[in-house]
Length: 321
Ligand SMILES: NC(=O)c1ccc[n+]([C@@H]2O[C@H](COP(=O)([O-])OP(=O)(O)OC[C@H]3O[C@@H](n4cnc5c(N)ncnc54)[C@H](OP(=O)(O)O)[C@@H]3O)[C@@H](O)[C@H]2O)c1
Image (cartoon, rainbow, N blue to C red; front, side):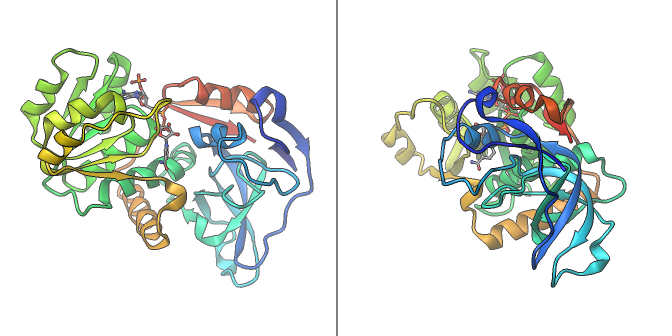
């Protein structure tokens, strides 16, 4: 099969290549998925760049997320799953066979049925972003009736945070940096979209608030706004690191009895991940999740695809194997 792969860490143009490799067979508890679309996330270029270097098992096919059809199952997996449309999550975590290839082999649990009504584009966009959004939203309890602030509502995680929060009965305000992103966030269902570059942004959010929970990706840039709009005892949940760490205004956080939480998908407890997968699958089945605009790249353009994500492409970058 044709696969994108790397065997050392470094810039995309230096280490990523497309090669013919033997098609993998599913081992016990695994399924093999014929990949239709592979979804690219920031973690893919960060991992390939060596952000968290680990020994590479010969080579690594990148990308966790994908959509496709199960065409073989390993021992212990129900044969009835052959032919099932699925979306994948964490395919490349501790596993050589990520989704940037014609086939991926991964644990059966990491391939989730994709209903007929849901597009492959949506399926390939779900894994990292929707599961991260779910953990951030629900780690501190239900959101029904609560007011949620989603920072960066046109980003992949922000998009699903808006849609999952609305689907769960929350009021949602979100921040973006311009009109194109404002339109995407409004389409996702945000009740109020605020340009965070606007000098009156905090007042606009506060007028909608008080906010119960903030889903944050730029704590340093946004903490002053978050603290200004969040009710005492509220939570600020951060899922991304900025180039430099923020200075924490301890007194202001303490005065407001704010709870700070940090989420990294790779370390989310298994039971919480299972709940996230179940809830995301139910939201897909209910038609509550939608795809962002997509940018398709053929497998041969894997370098350009990962560089597009690193460059901040608006919408979702997908690779066609
Ligand atoms: N912890 C985890 O497990 C986890 C999981 C998934 C993603 N992540 C990380 O989360 C980040 C976002 O991932 P993604 O896939 O959602 O990326 P994405 O699709 O590129 O979205 C990022 C969004 O954030 C917005 N943004 C940037 N600075 C902002 C600010 N100060 N305030 C509000 N919005 C801001 C960007 O728009 P503007 O620049 O125009 O504002 C963009 O819309 C990445 O760093 C990624 O590595 C972490």
